[in-house]
Length: 197
Length: 217
Image (cartoon, rainbow over all chains, first blue to last red; front, side):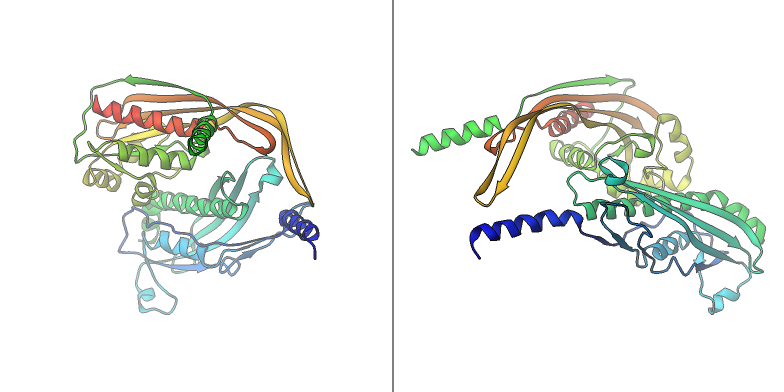
Protein backbone atom coordinates (compact mmCIF):
# COMPACT_ATOMS: atom_id res chain seq x y z
CA UNK A 1 0.00 0.00 0.00
CA UNK A 2 1.55 3.29 -1.01
CA UNK A 3 1.54 6.44 1.09
CA UNK A 4 -1.25 8.14 -0.88
CA UNK A 5 -3.71 5.27 -0.23
CA UNK A 6 -2.76 5.25 3.46
CA UNK A 7 -3.51 8.99 3.68
CA UNK A 8 -6.93 8.57 2.02
CA UNK A 9 -7.88 5.74 4.43
CA UNK A 10 -6.77 7.85 7.41
CA UNK A 11 -8.85 10.82 6.17
CA UNK A 12 -11.92 8.60 5.64
CA UNK A 13 -11.54 7.13 9.13
CA UNK A 14 -11.40 10.66 10.53
CA UNK A 15 -14.60 11.67 8.74
CA UNK A 16 -16.45 8.52 9.83
CA UNK A 17 -16.00 9.38 13.52
CA UNK A 18 -18.75 12.00 13.19
CA UNK A 19 -21.33 9.32 12.34
CA UNK A 20 -20.50 6.95 15.25
CA UNK A 21 -22.61 6.04 18.28
CA UNK A 22 -22.52 7.41 21.82
CA UNK A 23 -22.36 4.92 24.69
CA UNK A 24 -22.47 6.67 28.02
CA UNK A 25 -22.01 5.09 31.43
CA UNK A 26 -23.30 7.27 34.24
CA UNK A 27 -21.73 7.33 37.65
CA UNK A 28 -22.14 10.36 39.82
CA UNK A 29 -21.32 11.71 43.26
CA UNK A 30 -24.16 13.32 45.21
CA UNK A 31 -23.11 14.83 48.55
CA UNK A 32 -25.05 14.03 51.73
CA UNK A 33 -27.67 16.78 52.22
CA UNK A 34 -27.17 19.18 55.12
CA UNK A 35 -30.52 18.45 56.81
CA UNK A 36 -31.84 17.17 60.13
CA UNK A 37 -32.42 13.45 60.36
CA UNK A 38 -35.71 12.30 61.86
CA UNK A 39 -34.74 9.40 64.12
CA UNK A 40 -38.37 8.48 64.91
CA UNK A 41 -39.36 7.51 61.39
CA UNK A 42 -38.00 4.74 59.21
CA UNK A 43 -38.48 4.64 55.45
CA UNK A 44 -38.62 1.76 53.03
CA UNK A 45 -37.67 2.73 49.47
CA UNK A 46 -39.40 0.87 46.64
CA UNK A 47 -37.90 1.50 43.20
CA UNK A 48 -39.71 1.00 39.95
CA UNK A 49 -38.09 -1.89 38.06
CA UNK A 50 -37.39 0.39 35.09
CA UNK A 51 -35.39 2.75 37.28
CA UNK A 52 -32.98 0.11 38.60
CA UNK A 53 -30.03 -0.31 36.25
CA UNK A 54 -31.89 1.76 33.64
CA UNK A 55 -30.44 1.68 30.15
CA UNK A 56 -31.83 4.35 27.84
CA UNK A 57 -31.80 4.13 24.07
CA UNK A 58 -34.10 6.34 21.97
CA UNK A 59 -36.93 4.66 20.07
CA UNK A 60 -36.28 6.79 17.00
CA UNK A 61 -32.90 8.12 16.01
CA UNK A 62 -33.19 11.31 13.99
CA UNK A 63 -31.60 11.63 10.58
CA UNK A 64 -27.86 12.45 10.65
CA UNK A 65 -27.87 11.79 14.39
CA UNK A 66 -25.58 9.38 16.19
CA UNK A 67 -27.32 6.55 18.06
CA UNK A 68 -27.17 6.88 21.82
CA UNK A 69 -27.18 4.36 24.64
CA UNK A 70 -27.05 5.62 28.22
CA UNK A 71 -26.38 3.14 30.98
CA UNK A 72 -27.45 4.71 34.27
CA UNK A 73 -26.31 1.72 36.34
CA UNK A 74 -27.23 2.25 39.98
CA UNK A 75 -26.71 6.02 39.86
CA UNK A 76 -30.43 6.83 40.27
CA UNK A 77 -30.96 4.33 43.11
CA UNK A 78 -27.88 5.71 44.92
CA UNK A 79 -29.20 9.26 44.50
CA UNK A 80 -32.51 8.51 46.25
CA UNK A 81 -30.88 6.35 48.92
CA UNK A 82 -28.41 9.14 49.65
CA UNK A 83 -31.09 11.84 49.94
CA UNK A 84 -33.68 9.87 51.92
CA UNK A 85 -31.09 8.32 54.27
CA UNK A 86 -30.29 11.88 55.40
CA UNK A 87 -33.92 12.36 56.52
CA UNK A 88 -34.92 8.87 57.70
CA UNK A 89 -33.40 5.56 58.71
CA UNK A 90 -33.75 3.30 55.70
CA UNK A 91 -35.02 -0.22 56.27
CA UNK A 92 -35.41 -3.34 54.12
CA UNK A 93 -38.63 -5.31 53.70
CA UNK A 94 -37.53 -8.19 55.91
CA UNK A 95 -35.60 -6.31 58.57
CA UNK A 96 -36.75 -6.21 62.19
CA UNK A 97 -36.59 -2.41 62.10
CA UNK A 98 -39.31 -2.43 59.46
CA UNK A 99 -41.72 -3.71 62.15
CA UNK A 100 -41.21 -0.57 64.21
CA UNK A 101 -44.26 1.65 64.81
CA UNK A 102 -43.48 4.61 62.53
CA UNK A 103 -42.59 3.58 59.06
CA UNK A 104 -43.32 5.04 55.67
CA UNK A 105 -43.01 3.55 52.22
CA UNK A 106 -41.59 5.68 49.41
CA UNK A 107 -42.34 4.50 45.87
CA UNK A 108 -40.02 6.02 43.29
CA UNK A 109 -40.46 5.88 39.52
CA UNK A 110 -38.96 7.72 36.58
CA UNK A 111 -41.72 9.59 34.78
CA UNK A 112 -39.68 11.33 32.06
CA UNK A 113 -36.14 11.52 30.81
CA UNK A 114 -35.58 14.04 28.02
CA UNK A 115 -32.56 15.62 26.42
CA UNK A 116 -31.45 17.97 23.66
CA UNK A 117 -28.17 17.59 21.83
CA UNK A 118 -26.41 20.55 20.13
CA UNK A 119 -27.58 19.05 16.82
CA UNK A 120 -31.25 19.03 17.91
CA UNK A 121 -31.26 22.49 19.49
CA UNK A 122 -28.87 24.18 17.05
CA UNK A 123 -26.73 25.50 19.88
CA UNK A 124 -23.53 24.49 21.62
CA UNK A 125 -24.88 22.64 24.65
CA UNK A 126 -26.42 19.43 25.92
CA UNK A 127 -29.57 19.87 28.03
CA UNK A 128 -31.08 17.10 30.17
CA UNK A 129 -34.35 16.83 32.13
CA UNK A 130 -35.51 14.24 34.64
CA UNK A 131 -38.98 13.98 36.13
CA UNK A 132 -39.63 11.50 38.94
CA UNK A 133 -42.83 10.49 40.65
CA UNK A 134 -42.46 9.99 44.40
CA UNK A 135 -45.34 8.51 46.36
CA UNK A 136 -45.26 8.55 50.14
CA UNK A 137 -47.42 5.90 51.84
CA UNK A 138 -48.02 4.94 55.46
CA UNK A 139 -47.61 1.43 56.88
CA UNK A 140 -51.14 0.57 55.73
CA UNK A 141 -50.30 1.61 52.17
CA UNK A 142 -52.49 4.71 52.42
CA UNK A 143 -51.17 7.62 50.38
CA UNK A 144 -49.74 10.47 52.44
CA UNK A 145 -48.33 12.57 49.62
CA UNK A 146 -47.53 12.44 45.91
CA UNK A 147 -44.69 14.52 44.47
CA UNK A 148 -43.25 15.19 41.05
CA UNK A 149 -39.59 16.08 41.36
CA UNK A 150 -37.68 17.47 38.40
CA UNK A 151 -34.00 18.02 37.69
CA UNK A 152 -32.35 19.98 34.91
CA UNK A 153 -28.74 20.12 33.78
CA UNK A 154 -26.92 21.70 30.88
CA UNK A 155 -23.34 21.63 29.69
CA UNK A 156 -21.71 23.65 26.94
CA UNK A 157 -19.63 21.50 24.62
CA UNK A 158 -16.72 23.99 24.81
CA UNK A 159 -13.49 22.13 25.38
CA UNK A 160 -15.28 18.86 26.20
CA UNK A 161 -15.67 15.87 23.90
CA UNK A 162 -19.35 15.27 22.99
CA UNK A 163 -19.60 12.19 25.27
CA UNK A 164 -18.07 14.05 28.19
CA UNK A 165 -20.34 17.09 27.78
CA UNK A 166 -23.45 14.87 27.61
CA UNK A 167 -22.36 12.83 30.64
CA UNK A 168 -21.73 16.03 32.62
CA UNK A 169 -25.17 17.42 31.68
CA UNK A 170 -26.76 14.18 33.01
CA UNK A 171 -24.69 14.33 36.21
CA UNK A 172 -25.70 17.97 36.77
CA UNK A 173 -29.38 17.09 36.21
CA UNK A 174 -29.18 14.19 38.70
CA UNK A 175 -27.52 16.47 41.25
CA UNK A 176 -30.25 19.06 40.65
CA UNK A 177 -32.89 16.36 41.18
CA UNK A 178 -31.27 15.51 44.51
CA UNK A 179 -31.23 19.18 45.53
CA UNK A 180 -34.91 19.71 44.63
CA UNK A 181 -35.91 16.47 46.35
CA UNK A 182 -34.00 17.41 49.53
CA UNK A 183 -35.69 20.80 49.71
CA UNK A 184 -39.13 19.34 48.99
CA UNK A 185 -38.66 16.70 51.71
CA UNK A 186 -37.41 19.34 54.15
CA UNK A 187 -40.50 21.47 53.44
CA UNK A 188 -42.94 18.56 53.79
CA UNK A 189 -41.37 16.53 56.58
CA UNK A 190 -43.53 18.08 59.33
CA UNK A 191 -46.71 17.15 57.48
CA UNK A 192 -45.42 13.61 56.91
CA UNK A 193 -44.60 13.20 60.60
CA UNK A 194 -48.00 14.58 61.61
CA UNK A 195 -49.89 12.33 59.23
CA UNK A 196 -48.40 9.13 60.67
CA UNK A 197 -48.35 10.17 64.32
CA UNK B 1 21.89 32.17 13.46
CA UNK B 2 20.92 31.41 17.07
CA UNK B 3 20.07 35.11 17.71
CA UNK B 4 17.94 35.19 14.57
CA UNK B 5 16.01 32.09 15.75
CA UNK B 6 15.52 33.62 19.22
CA UNK B 7 14.26 36.89 17.74
CA UNK B 8 11.90 35.08 15.39
CA UNK B 9 10.52 33.06 18.33
CA UNK B 10 9.98 36.20 20.45
CA UNK B 11 8.33 37.98 17.52
CA UNK B 12 6.06 34.98 16.93
CA UNK B 13 5.13 34.89 20.61
CA UNK B 14 4.31 38.60 20.53
CA UNK B 15 2.09 38.19 17.50
CA UNK B 16 0.21 35.12 18.77
CA UNK B 17 -1.34 37.21 21.58
CA UNK B 18 -3.98 39.52 20.15
CA UNK B 19 -4.83 43.01 21.38
CA UNK B 20 -7.32 43.46 24.20
CA UNK B 21 -8.61 46.37 26.29
CA UNK B 22 -9.50 45.98 29.96
CA UNK B 23 -11.82 48.23 31.94
CA UNK B 24 -12.32 47.65 35.67
CA UNK B 25 -14.74 49.27 38.07
CA UNK B 26 -15.32 49.27 41.83
CA UNK B 27 -18.17 50.39 44.06
CA UNK B 28 -18.20 50.22 47.87
CA UNK B 29 -21.56 50.47 49.64
CA UNK B 30 -20.69 49.99 53.31
CA UNK B 31 -17.62 49.60 55.52
CA UNK B 32 -16.29 46.08 55.94
CA UNK B 33 -13.31 44.12 57.33
CA UNK B 34 -11.89 40.64 56.97
CA UNK B 35 -9.32 38.91 59.15
CA UNK B 36 -6.90 36.13 58.25
CA UNK B 37 -8.98 33.39 59.90
CA UNK B 38 -12.10 34.36 57.97
CA UNK B 39 -13.08 33.01 54.56
CA UNK B 40 -14.78 34.04 51.38
CA UNK B 41 -16.48 31.89 48.77
CA UNK B 42 -17.26 32.55 45.11
CA UNK B 43 -20.54 31.44 43.58
CA UNK B 44 -21.79 32.06 40.07
CA UNK B 45 -25.38 33.02 39.40
CA UNK B 46 -27.49 30.19 38.06
CA UNK B 47 -27.98 29.13 34.45
CA UNK B 48 -31.61 28.64 35.57
CA UNK B 49 -31.73 32.45 35.72
CA UNK B 50 -30.09 32.82 32.31
CA UNK B 51 -26.57 33.43 33.59
CA UNK B 52 -23.85 31.60 31.68
CA UNK B 53 -20.67 32.13 33.70
CA UNK B 54 -18.27 29.45 32.53
CA UNK B 55 -16.96 26.78 34.92
CA UNK B 56 -13.38 27.33 33.78
CA UNK B 57 -13.73 31.05 34.57
CA UNK B 58 -14.82 30.18 38.13
CA UNK B 59 -11.87 27.77 38.47
CA UNK B 60 -9.51 30.46 37.17
CA UNK B 61 -10.90 33.08 39.57
CA UNK B 62 -10.70 30.73 42.59
CA UNK B 63 -7.07 29.82 41.95
CA UNK B 64 -6.05 33.36 40.96
CA UNK B 65 -7.42 34.90 44.21
CA UNK B 66 -5.84 32.12 46.29
CA UNK B 67 -2.43 32.81 44.69
CA UNK B 68 -2.58 36.61 44.93
CA UNK B 69 -3.12 37.05 48.67
CA UNK B 70 -2.79 35.47 52.10
CA UNK B 71 -5.01 37.90 54.02
CA UNK B 72 -8.02 35.56 54.06
CA UNK B 73 -9.02 32.04 53.12
CA UNK B 74 -10.90 31.21 49.93
CA UNK B 75 -13.02 28.07 49.92
CA UNK B 76 -13.22 26.52 46.43
CA UNK B 77 -16.73 26.82 44.97
CA UNK B 78 -17.27 23.07 44.40
CA UNK B 79 -16.08 22.19 47.91
CA UNK B 80 -18.45 24.79 49.37
CA UNK B 81 -21.41 23.50 47.32
CA UNK B 82 -20.69 19.91 48.42
CA UNK B 83 -20.48 20.88 52.10
CA UNK B 84 -23.70 22.91 51.94
CA UNK B 85 -25.62 20.65 49.54
CA UNK B 86 -28.45 21.28 48.55
CA UNK B 87 -28.63 24.95 49.62
CA UNK B 88 -26.22 26.60 47.15
CA UNK B 89 -26.92 24.60 43.98
CA UNK B 90 -27.75 26.45 40.73
CA UNK B 91 -31.51 26.02 41.25
CA UNK B 92 -31.56 26.63 45.01
CA UNK B 93 -28.86 29.24 45.76
CA UNK B 94 -29.94 32.82 46.51
CA UNK B 95 -29.90 34.81 43.28
CA UNK B 96 -30.16 38.22 44.89
CA UNK B 97 -29.46 39.74 48.29
CA UNK B 98 -33.22 39.63 49.01
CA UNK B 99 -33.10 35.80 48.78
CA UNK B 100 -30.35 35.53 51.39
CA UNK B 101 -32.45 35.63 54.62
CA UNK B 102 -34.47 32.61 53.42
CA UNK B 103 -31.32 30.44 53.33
CA UNK B 104 -29.77 31.97 56.44
CA UNK B 105 -32.92 31.25 58.47
CA UNK B 106 -31.93 27.59 58.21
CA UNK B 107 -30.12 26.87 61.50
CA UNK B 108 -27.92 24.13 60.03
CA UNK B 109 -26.69 26.41 57.23
CA UNK B 110 -26.20 29.36 59.56
CA UNK B 111 -24.21 27.40 62.14
CA UNK B 112 -22.01 25.72 59.52
CA UNK B 113 -21.23 29.12 57.96
CA UNK B 114 -20.30 30.39 61.43
CA UNK B 115 -18.19 27.30 62.23
CA UNK B 116 -16.27 27.67 58.97
CA UNK B 117 -15.96 31.44 59.50
CA UNK B 118 -17.30 32.17 56.02
CA UNK B 119 -17.90 35.92 56.12
CA UNK B 120 -18.43 36.95 52.52
CA UNK B 121 -20.18 35.33 49.58
CA UNK B 122 -19.16 36.77 46.23
CA UNK B 123 -21.73 36.33 43.48
CA UNK B 124 -20.26 36.23 40.00
CA UNK B 125 -22.27 37.06 36.90
CA UNK B 126 -21.29 37.53 33.29
CA UNK B 127 -19.80 35.57 30.42
CA UNK B 128 -17.57 35.72 27.37
CA UNK B 129 -19.37 36.44 24.11
CA UNK B 130 -18.31 36.68 20.49
CA UNK B 131 -19.79 39.92 19.14
CA UNK B 132 -18.80 39.86 15.50
CA UNK B 133 -16.82 37.65 13.19
CA UNK B 134 -15.77 37.94 9.59
CA UNK B 135 -13.38 36.65 6.96
CA UNK B 136 -12.99 33.26 5.38
CA UNK B 137 -10.61 30.41 5.94
CA UNK B 138 -10.56 27.25 3.91
CA UNK B 139 -8.50 24.15 4.39
CA UNK B 140 -8.00 21.23 2.04
CA UNK B 141 -6.17 17.95 2.25
CA UNK B 142 -5.18 15.59 -0.52
CA UNK B 143 -2.84 12.66 -1.09
CA UNK B 144 0.04 15.09 -1.62
CA UNK B 145 -0.58 16.99 1.61
CA UNK B 146 -2.84 19.72 2.88
CA UNK B 147 -3.01 23.35 3.86
CA UNK B 148 -5.17 26.36 4.65
CA UNK B 149 -5.61 29.73 3.01
CA UNK B 150 -7.51 32.84 4.07
CA UNK B 151 -8.04 35.24 6.93
CA UNK B 152 -10.64 35.16 9.71
CA UNK B 153 -11.18 37.44 12.68
CA UNK B 154 -13.64 37.89 15.53
CA UNK B 155 -14.32 40.25 18.45
CA UNK B 156 -14.78 38.84 21.95
CA UNK B 157 -16.13 40.60 25.03
CA UNK B 158 -15.62 39.16 28.49
CA UNK B 159 -17.78 41.07 30.97
CA UNK B 160 -17.95 39.87 34.57
CA UNK B 161 -19.31 41.38 37.75
CA UNK B 162 -18.67 40.35 41.36
CA UNK B 163 -21.14 41.38 44.03
CA UNK B 164 -19.79 41.03 47.59
CA UNK B 165 -22.39 39.94 50.17
CA UNK B 166 -21.77 40.09 53.91
CA UNK B 167 -23.36 36.92 55.28
CA UNK B 168 -23.50 38.12 58.89
CA UNK B 169 -25.12 41.47 58.03
CA UNK B 170 -27.13 40.09 55.07
CA UNK B 171 -26.18 43.11 52.97
CA UNK B 172 -24.29 43.82 49.79
CA UNK B 173 -21.06 45.63 50.71
CA UNK B 174 -19.93 46.41 47.17
CA UNK B 175 -19.37 45.46 43.56
CA UNK B 176 -16.36 45.07 41.32
CA UNK B 177 -16.36 44.42 37.60
CA UNK B 178 -14.01 43.69 34.73
CA UNK B 179 -14.81 44.26 31.09
CA UNK B 180 -12.32 43.05 28.48
CA UNK B 181 -12.72 43.37 24.73
CA UNK B 182 -10.34 41.97 22.19
CA UNK B 183 -9.93 40.96 18.57
CA UNK B 184 -8.59 37.55 17.59
CA UNK B 185 -7.48 36.61 14.08
CA UNK B 186 -6.22 33.66 12.10
CA UNK B 187 -4.20 34.44 8.98
CA UNK B 188 -3.38 31.33 6.98
CA UNK B 189 -0.97 30.78 4.14
CA UNK B 190 -0.62 26.99 4.15
CA UNK B 191 -0.25 26.98 7.95
CA UNK B 192 -2.90 28.83 10.02
CA UNK B 193 -1.41 31.09 12.73
CA UNK B 194 -3.98 31.81 15.46
CA UNK B 195 -3.45 35.22 17.11
CA UNK B 196 -5.81 35.07 20.06
CA UNK B 197 -6.98 37.85 22.33
CA UNK B 198 -7.34 36.01 25.64
CA UNK B 199 -10.22 38.12 26.89
CA UNK B 200 -11.52 35.58 29.41
CA UNK B 201 -8.07 35.05 30.93
CA UNK B 202 -7.52 38.83 31.12
CA UNK B 203 -10.95 39.28 32.72
CA UNK B 204 -10.09 36.58 35.29
CA UNK B 205 -6.82 38.35 36.06
CA UNK B 206 -8.49 41.79 36.21
CA UNK B 207 -11.41 40.67 38.37
CA UNK B 208 -9.19 38.72 40.80
CA UNK B 209 -6.98 41.82 41.19
CA UNK B 210 -10.12 43.86 41.87
CA UNK B 211 -11.45 41.42 44.48
CA UNK B 212 -8.08 41.17 46.26
CA UNK B 213 -7.75 44.99 46.14
CA UNK B 214 -11.30 45.38 47.44
CA UNK B 215 -10.49 43.44 50.63
CA UNK B 216 -7.06 45.07 51.03
CA UNK B 217 -8.38 48.62 50.96
